[in-house]
Image 1: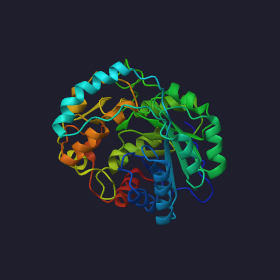
Image 2 (image 1 turned 180 degrees about the vertical axis):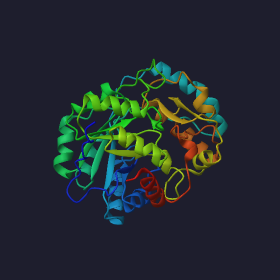
Image 3 (image 1 turned 90 degrees about the vertical axis):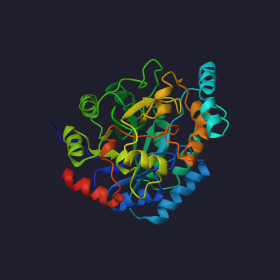
Image 4 (image 1 turned 120 degrees about the vertical axis):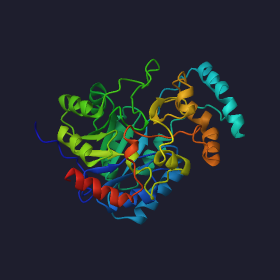
Amino acid sequence: MPAPAALPYPPGRAPRRALWAAPMAGGASSTALVVAVGAAGGLGFVPAGYLSPDAFEARLAEVEAATDAPWGANLFLPGPTAADTAAVAAHAEALRPVAERLGVALGAPAWDDDALDAKVEVLARHRPAAVSFVFGVPDPAVVGRLREATGAAILATATTPAETVQVAGAGVDAIVLQGAEAGGHRGVLVDDPALPGGGELVPLLDLVAGARRVTALPLVAAGGLMTGAAIRAALDAGASAVQLGTAFLATPEAGTSTVHRRALLDATFAGTTVTRAFTGRPARGLANALARGFPDAPSAYPEVHHLTRPLRAAAARAGDADALHLWAGEGWRAVTEEPAGELVARLAREAGL
Protein backbone atom coordinates (compact mmCIF):
# COMPACT_ATOMS: atom_id res chain seq x y z
CA MET A 1 0.00 0.00 0.00
CA PRO A 2 1.43 3.43 -0.89
CA ALA A 3 2.08 5.85 1.95
CA PRO A 4 -0.84 8.17 2.82
CA ALA A 5 -0.70 11.58 1.21
CA ALA A 6 0.44 14.45 3.39
CA LEU A 7 -2.08 17.07 4.44
CA PRO A 8 -1.40 20.37 2.64
CA TYR A 9 -1.10 22.68 5.62
CA PRO A 10 -0.01 26.26 4.89
CA PRO A 11 3.69 27.02 5.47
CA GLY A 12 4.52 27.45 9.15
CA ARG A 13 1.06 26.31 10.31
CA ALA A 14 1.36 22.53 10.43
CA PRO A 15 0.71 20.83 13.79
CA ARG A 16 3.55 18.68 15.13
CA ARG A 17 1.27 15.66 15.52
CA ALA A 18 -1.34 14.14 13.22
CA LEU A 19 -3.95 14.25 15.98
CA TRP A 20 -6.94 16.59 15.86
CA ALA A 21 -9.56 17.50 18.45
CA ALA A 22 -12.90 17.39 16.64
CA PRO A 23 -15.02 20.54 16.36
CA MET A 24 -17.84 19.98 18.88
CA ALA A 25 -20.42 22.73 18.47
CA GLY A 26 -22.52 23.81 21.41
CA GLY A 27 -19.77 24.47 23.94
CA ALA A 28 -17.53 21.42 24.34
CA SER A 29 -14.84 22.79 21.99
CA SER A 30 -13.90 25.69 24.24
CA THR A 31 -11.07 28.10 23.57
CA ALA A 32 -9.16 26.46 26.43
CA LEU A 33 -9.46 23.06 24.71
CA VAL A 34 -8.32 24.39 21.33
CA VAL A 35 -5.34 26.10 22.96
CA ALA A 36 -4.34 23.07 25.07
CA VAL A 37 -4.49 20.69 22.11
CA GLY A 38 -2.43 23.07 20.00
CA ALA A 39 0.16 23.50 22.74
CA ALA A 40 0.54 19.70 22.88
CA GLY A 41 1.25 19.57 19.16
CA GLY A 42 -2.21 18.59 17.96
CA LEU A 43 -4.78 20.61 16.05
CA GLY A 44 -7.80 22.00 17.89
CA PHE A 45 -10.88 23.21 16.01
CA VAL A 46 -13.21 26.16 16.56
CA PRO A 47 -16.76 25.14 15.56
CA ALA A 48 -18.83 27.86 13.93
CA GLY A 49 -22.08 25.92 14.34
CA TYR A 50 -24.81 27.64 16.40
CA LEU A 51 -22.71 30.79 16.87
CA SER A 52 -23.71 34.12 15.37
CA PRO A 53 -21.14 35.58 12.95
CA ASP A 54 -20.13 38.12 15.61
CA ALA A 55 -19.70 35.40 18.24
CA PHE A 56 -17.69 33.30 15.78
CA GLU A 57 -15.45 36.31 15.08
CA ALA A 58 -14.96 36.79 18.82
CA ARG A 59 -14.05 33.12 19.32
CA LEU A 60 -11.46 33.24 16.53
CA ALA A 61 -9.93 36.41 17.93
CA GLU A 62 -9.84 34.83 21.38
CA VAL A 63 -7.99 31.77 20.09
CA GLU A 64 -5.52 33.85 18.09
CA ALA A 65 -4.79 36.01 21.14
CA ALA A 66 -4.23 32.94 23.32
CA THR A 67 -1.92 30.83 21.17
CA ASP A 68 0.65 30.88 18.39
CA ALA A 69 -0.05 27.21 17.65
CA PRO A 70 -1.97 26.16 14.54
CA TRP A 71 -5.75 25.76 14.83
CA GLY A 72 -8.66 24.87 12.58
CA ALA A 73 -12.29 25.86 12.09
CA ASN A 74 -15.43 24.00 11.07
CA LEU A 75 -18.48 25.23 9.16
CA PHE A 76 -21.98 23.73 8.92
CA LEU A 77 -23.50 23.55 5.45
CA PRO A 78 -27.25 24.27 5.18
CA GLY A 79 -29.58 21.38 4.42
CA PRO A 80 -32.87 21.36 2.49
CA THR A 81 -35.65 23.77 3.45
CA ALA A 82 -38.55 21.37 2.86
CA ALA A 83 -39.12 19.69 6.21
CA ASP A 84 -42.35 17.75 6.76
CA THR A 85 -44.22 20.30 8.87
CA ALA A 86 -46.85 17.79 9.97
CA ALA A 87 -44.17 15.39 11.21
CA VAL A 88 -42.41 18.20 13.06
CA ALA A 89 -45.70 19.24 14.67
CA ALA A 90 -46.34 15.64 15.74
CA HIS A 91 -42.89 15.44 17.29
CA ALA A 92 -43.53 18.69 19.14
CA GLU A 93 -46.77 17.30 20.53
CA ALA A 94 -45.02 14.14 21.68
CA LEU A 95 -42.30 16.21 23.40
CA ARG A 96 -44.72 18.61 25.10
CA PRO A 97 -45.04 16.59 28.33
CA VAL A 98 -41.25 16.55 28.70
CA ALA A 99 -41.06 20.32 28.22
CA GLU A 100 -43.91 20.88 30.69
CA ARG A 101 -42.16 18.71 33.27
CA LEU A 102 -39.08 20.90 32.88
CA GLY A 103 -41.16 24.09 33.06
CA VAL A 104 -40.40 25.47 29.59
CA ALA A 105 -42.17 26.00 26.29
CA LEU A 106 -40.80 24.39 23.16
CA GLY A 107 -39.08 26.62 20.61
CA ALA A 108 -40.24 27.62 17.14
CA PRO A 109 -39.18 25.04 14.51
CA ALA A 110 -37.59 27.32 11.91
CA TRP A 111 -35.10 26.65 9.10
CA ASP A 112 -31.91 28.68 8.75
CA ASP A 113 -28.58 28.33 6.93
CA ASP A 114 -26.43 28.92 10.07
CA ALA A 115 -25.35 32.23 8.49
CA LEU A 116 -22.88 30.34 6.31
CA ASP A 117 -21.98 33.18 3.93
CA ALA A 118 -21.31 35.61 6.78
CA LYS A 119 -19.19 33.03 8.62
CA VAL A 120 -17.14 32.35 5.49
CA GLU A 121 -16.33 36.07 5.33
CA VAL A 122 -15.46 36.10 9.04
CA LEU A 123 -13.11 33.18 8.59
CA ALA A 124 -11.53 34.78 5.53
CA ARG A 125 -10.16 37.49 7.84
CA HIS A 126 -8.26 34.96 9.99
CA ARG A 127 -5.46 32.42 9.59
CA PRO A 128 -6.64 28.86 10.27
CA ALA A 129 -4.38 25.95 9.37
CA ALA A 130 -7.38 23.89 8.24
CA VAL A 131 -11.07 24.47 7.52
CA SER A 132 -13.55 21.59 7.46
CA PHE A 133 -17.14 21.44 6.23
CA VAL A 134 -19.87 19.06 7.38
CA PHE A 135 -23.48 18.20 6.40
CA GLY A 136 -23.04 18.57 2.65
CA VAL A 137 -20.88 19.21 -0.38
CA PRO A 138 -19.29 22.67 -0.21
CA ASP A 139 -19.67 25.02 -3.15
CA PRO A 140 -16.37 24.98 -5.09
CA ALA A 141 -16.48 28.78 -5.12
CA VAL A 142 -16.56 28.83 -1.30
CA VAL A 143 -13.70 26.33 -1.20
CA GLY A 144 -11.68 28.57 -3.49
CA ARG A 145 -12.57 31.71 -1.54
CA LEU A 146 -11.34 30.28 1.77
CA ARG A 147 -8.24 28.70 0.27
CA GLU A 148 -7.23 31.99 -1.38
CA ALA A 149 -8.01 34.15 1.66
CA THR A 150 -6.51 31.94 4.39
CA GLY A 151 -4.11 29.51 2.74
CA ALA A 152 -5.70 26.79 4.88
CA ALA A 153 -6.13 23.16 3.94
CA ILE A 154 -9.81 22.75 3.02
CA LEU A 155 -11.66 19.56 3.96
CA ALA A 156 -15.16 18.15 3.65
CA THR A 157 -16.77 15.29 5.57
CA ALA A 158 -17.89 11.94 4.14
CA THR A 159 -19.46 8.87 5.75
CA THR A 160 -19.27 6.40 2.83
CA PRO A 161 -16.94 5.81 -0.13
CA ALA A 162 -19.68 7.14 -2.44
CA GLU A 163 -19.86 10.38 -0.44
CA THR A 164 -16.06 10.55 -0.60
CA VAL A 165 -16.29 10.77 -4.39
CA GLN A 166 -18.96 13.48 -4.14
CA VAL A 167 -17.06 15.77 -1.77
CA ALA A 168 -13.77 15.23 -3.60
CA GLY A 169 -15.48 16.74 -6.64
CA ALA A 170 -15.84 20.06 -4.81
CA GLY A 171 -12.10 20.66 -5.08
CA VAL A 172 -11.22 20.13 -1.42
CA ASP A 173 -7.67 19.32 -0.32
CA ALA A 174 -8.53 16.40 1.99
CA ILE A 175 -11.48 14.50 3.39
CA VAL A 176 -12.63 13.83 6.95
CA LEU A 177 -14.00 10.28 7.10
CA GLN A 178 -16.62 9.84 9.81
CA GLY A 179 -17.05 6.19 10.73
CA ALA A 180 -20.24 4.69 12.12
CA GLU A 181 -18.70 4.67 15.62
CA ALA A 182 -18.54 8.48 15.83
CA GLY A 183 -20.43 10.46 18.44
CA GLY A 184 -22.48 13.55 17.68
CA HIS A 185 -24.18 14.40 14.43
CA ARG A 186 -23.75 12.06 11.50
CA GLY A 187 -22.13 13.91 8.62
CA VAL A 188 -24.30 12.32 5.94
CA LEU A 189 -24.61 14.51 2.86
CA VAL A 190 -28.35 13.80 2.59
CA ASP A 191 -30.32 12.44 5.55
CA ASP A 192 -32.40 9.48 4.34
CA PRO A 193 -35.40 9.37 6.72
CA ALA A 194 -35.90 5.67 5.95
CA LEU A 195 -32.57 4.80 7.62
CA PRO A 196 -31.91 5.29 11.35
CA GLY A 197 -28.39 6.55 10.63
CA GLY A 198 -29.46 8.72 7.72
CA GLY A 199 -27.37 6.53 5.43
CA GLU A 200 -25.18 3.46 5.48
CA LEU A 201 -23.33 3.02 8.79
CA VAL A 202 -19.80 2.13 7.64
CA PRO A 203 -17.26 1.21 10.35
CA LEU A 204 -14.24 3.50 10.34
CA LEU A 205 -11.54 1.08 9.18
CA ASP A 206 -13.79 -0.18 6.37
CA LEU A 207 -14.49 3.43 5.42
CA VAL A 208 -10.79 4.34 5.28
CA ALA A 209 -10.06 1.30 3.12
CA GLY A 210 -13.01 2.07 0.82
CA ALA A 211 -12.10 5.73 0.51
CA ARG A 212 -8.51 4.93 -0.38
CA ARG A 213 -9.80 2.97 -3.36
CA VAL A 214 -11.70 5.95 -4.77
CA THR A 215 -9.49 8.96 -4.00
CA ALA A 216 -5.82 9.88 -3.68
CA LEU A 217 -6.63 12.84 -1.40
CA PRO A 218 -5.34 12.79 2.18
CA LEU A 219 -7.83 11.25 4.64
CA VAL A 220 -8.55 12.18 8.26
CA ALA A 221 -10.08 9.29 10.22
CA ALA A 222 -12.77 10.01 12.84
CA GLY A 223 -15.09 7.81 14.86
CA GLY A 224 -14.61 5.87 18.08
CA LEU A 225 -10.88 6.58 18.39
CA MET A 226 -10.05 6.54 22.11
CA THR A 227 -6.72 4.70 22.38
CA GLY A 228 -3.29 4.79 20.84
CA ALA A 229 -3.85 1.33 19.37
CA ALA A 230 -7.02 2.49 17.59
CA ILE A 231 -5.23 5.57 16.28
CA ARG A 232 -2.36 3.46 15.00
CA ALA A 233 -4.82 1.10 13.26
CA ALA A 234 -6.47 4.04 11.46
CA LEU A 235 -3.13 5.45 10.35
CA ASP A 236 -1.92 2.05 9.20
CA ALA A 237 -5.15 1.64 7.22
CA GLY A 238 -4.30 4.73 5.18
CA ALA A 239 -5.32 7.84 7.14
CA SER A 240 -2.97 10.81 7.18
CA ALA A 241 -4.34 12.10 10.50
CA VAL A 242 -6.98 11.26 13.08
CA GLN A 243 -9.76 13.32 14.67
CA LEU A 244 -11.07 12.61 18.18
CA GLY A 245 -14.10 14.13 19.91
CA THR A 246 -15.48 11.95 22.71
CA ALA A 247 -11.96 11.40 24.09
CA PHE A 248 -11.78 15.10 25.01
CA LEU A 249 -15.27 15.54 26.50
CA ALA A 250 -14.26 14.99 30.14
CA THR A 251 -10.97 16.90 30.02
CA PRO A 252 -10.85 19.91 32.38
CA GLU A 253 -10.54 22.30 29.45
CA ALA A 254 -13.65 21.10 27.59
CA GLY A 255 -16.85 23.14 27.89
CA THR A 256 -18.91 19.96 28.36
CA SER A 257 -21.90 20.43 30.67
CA THR A 258 -21.69 18.93 34.15
CA VAL A 259 -24.57 16.54 33.54
CA HIS A 260 -23.02 15.30 30.28
CA ARG A 261 -19.62 14.89 31.91
CA ARG A 262 -21.06 12.91 34.84
CA ALA A 263 -23.14 10.68 32.57
CA LEU A 264 -19.95 9.68 30.75
CA LEU A 265 -17.74 9.20 33.80
CA ASP A 266 -20.38 7.45 35.93
CA ALA A 267 -21.58 5.20 33.09
CA THR A 268 -25.13 6.35 33.80
CA PHE A 269 -26.41 4.71 30.61
CA ALA A 270 -25.59 1.32 29.16
CA GLY A 271 -24.56 2.32 25.64
CA THR A 272 -25.15 4.63 22.70
CA THR A 273 -27.82 4.98 20.06
CA VAL A 274 -28.37 7.06 16.93
CA THR A 275 -31.37 9.38 17.24
CA ARG A 276 -33.05 12.33 15.51
CA ALA A 277 -35.10 13.18 18.61
CA PHE A 278 -33.01 16.16 19.71
CA THR A 279 -32.18 17.96 16.46
CA GLY A 280 -33.88 16.27 13.51
CA ARG A 281 -30.53 15.01 12.17
CA PRO A 282 -29.20 11.57 13.13
CA ALA A 283 -26.65 11.79 15.93
CA ARG A 284 -25.01 9.25 18.21
CA GLY A 285 -25.25 9.79 21.95
CA LEU A 286 -25.77 7.97 25.21
CA ALA A 287 -29.02 5.99 25.13
CA ASN A 288 -31.06 8.02 27.62
CA ALA A 289 -34.84 8.13 27.81
CA LEU A 290 -35.39 10.86 25.24
CA ALA A 291 -32.92 9.36 22.76
CA ARG A 292 -34.62 5.96 23.00
CA GLY A 293 -38.18 7.16 23.34
CA PHE A 294 -38.72 8.84 19.96
CA PRO A 295 -37.59 6.43 17.22
CA ASP A 296 -39.92 8.12 14.72
CA ALA A 297 -38.53 11.63 15.19
CA PRO A 298 -38.57 13.36 11.79
CA SER A 299 -35.65 14.18 9.54
CA ALA A 300 -35.91 17.95 9.93
CA TYR A 301 -32.70 19.81 10.75
CA PRO A 302 -32.39 22.49 12.04
CA GLU A 303 -36.15 22.77 12.68
CA VAL A 304 -36.13 20.15 15.45
CA HIS A 305 -32.91 21.60 16.85
CA HIS A 306 -34.69 24.93 17.39
CA LEU A 307 -37.81 23.16 18.67
CA THR A 308 -35.95 21.32 21.45
CA ARG A 309 -33.35 23.94 22.34
CA PRO A 310 -35.28 25.36 25.34
CA LEU A 311 -36.02 21.82 26.56
CA ARG A 312 -32.36 20.81 26.37
CA ALA A 313 -31.20 23.99 28.11
CA ALA A 314 -33.69 23.39 30.92
CA ALA A 315 -32.55 19.77 31.25
CA ALA A 316 -28.93 20.91 31.60
CA ARG A 317 -29.90 23.42 34.30
CA ALA A 318 -31.91 20.80 36.17
CA GLY A 319 -29.25 18.10 35.86
CA ASP A 320 -31.74 15.89 34.03
CA ALA A 321 -29.59 13.44 32.06
CA ASP A 322 -32.64 11.75 30.53
CA ALA A 323 -33.76 14.80 28.55
CA LEU A 324 -30.40 16.14 27.35
CA HIS A 325 -28.42 15.29 24.22
CA LEU A 326 -25.41 13.39 25.55
CA TRP A 327 -23.34 13.00 22.38
CA ALA A 328 -20.79 10.21 22.62
CA GLY A 329 -19.02 7.79 20.31
CA GLU A 330 -19.01 4.04 20.74
CA GLY A 331 -15.69 4.14 22.61
CA TRP A 332 -17.07 6.42 25.34
CA ARG A 333 -16.25 4.05 28.21
CA ALA A 334 -12.55 4.86 27.73
CA VAL A 335 -13.09 8.57 28.47
CA THR A 336 -10.75 10.07 31.09
CA GLU A 337 -10.45 13.29 33.08
CA GLU A 338 -6.77 13.86 32.28
CA PRO A 339 -5.84 17.34 31.00
CA ALA A 340 -6.12 17.71 27.24
CA GLY A 341 -2.39 18.24 26.71
CA GLU A 342 -1.56 15.12 28.69
CA LEU A 343 -4.18 13.17 26.76
CA VAL A 344 -2.67 14.25 23.42
CA ALA A 345 0.83 13.34 24.59
CA ARG A 346 -0.26 9.93 25.92
CA LEU A 347 -2.23 8.98 22.83
CA ALA A 348 0.58 10.14 20.54
CA ARG A 349 3.08 8.09 22.53
CA GLU A 350 0.84 5.00 22.48
CA ALA A 351 0.27 5.40 18.73
CA GLY A 352 3.93 5.94 17.97
CA LEU A 353 3.42 9.43 16.60
